[in-house]
Length: 358
Image (cartoon, rainbow, N blue to C red; front, top):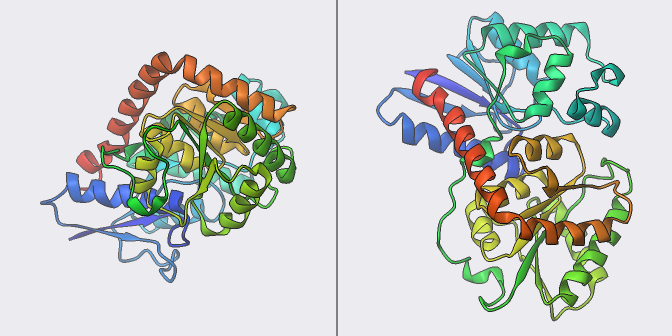
């Protein structure tokens, strides 16, 4: 019986990190039903240092190509274990460095990594049985760090493996009737660790954009993907006003339930990364509030560059309203591009279950 250890930031009530573990587990059950494999998640209380009992250690989805998590994989390699990188990424990069990566002007990047961290990344790249990263910006950063980045592929965010269904939203969502045009809004907090470092300003500008959409005839459905975001979401609703046009999700819903809600929306506007990933997986037009590199990394990976608006954008409310018009006008073309990219990433993310750790 082979044992696979899935390493991620899971078990803390964040729907994004938890859903990536869910799709990993479901993929293993679906694609390896007759193989003697046990998959163990790194839930709270499970040691990340003691990997002696595992045959394969997998660094899962999330912004985990950082010191600490990379150390776990490197430690496993030194113990003779097989290791894999399954859709992991990098996040804590300044806006200036992120733009330099995107443009290819890496001569101006100030991001630093210790020699030891680079050495571990290079060792992983040379020995991993699968090396898939979330998006092209992560891959470009690895190229900048000179860690044999050609051995890494852009596999996409594991959240693209989510499958939408045609079920109605859960009846206790207080969702709007089917004859209403609805905009889905995700808001929360990153404790001001965002591009521009002015979370309150972004919240105020988002409220102004919401007022514009209400004036255009839309109803709003506000949802959150992490319990600590509830306070910020309620505050946003208060700033919007118009209680006759605004409804709030009563709780954090599962990914499947939230995707059903999204499919009732004309488009969504999302702060947290995996709210955007879920909207993309459900093939619902979305505007991503680009608050850190991981959002830009994902949007670039699916080829929808016009769907992201940076949180340090001047005249943010107007930009959001303009972007909503643009994405709706161009959705037929963008949808085909989205489908092609997601299909390719689904094939890539599923390949280890067929060829690597069975």
